[in-house]
Amino acid sequence: MTVTEIAAEFTVTRSAVSQHLLVLATAGLVEAEKVGRQRIYRVLPGGLQRLQAEIDRFWTRELDQLVEDAHTIRRDS
Image (cartoon, rainbow, N blue to C red; front, top):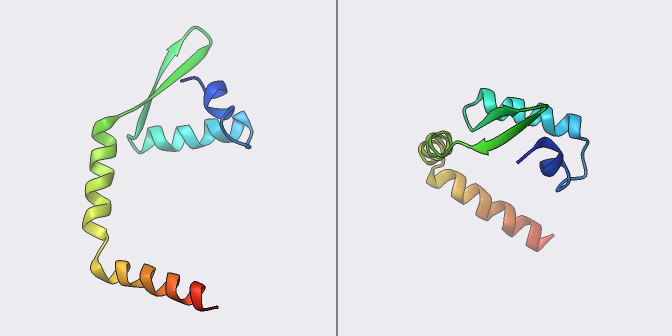
């Protein structure tokens, strides 16, 4: 997808989307291919798999409990 196509899905500027895509590319989550004057972005499955593995390692039962407690507090307020 191009930046223009991606930006059309959000309420932020194309410039903001470009900045976010640069961060995602730096993190290895997306890649860009220059085609003429445009860049075509695609998701890198390997990058997402590494991210998921890191989240799985980080996300513990304690965080699950914190989420449950937050929902309970919100519901009881």
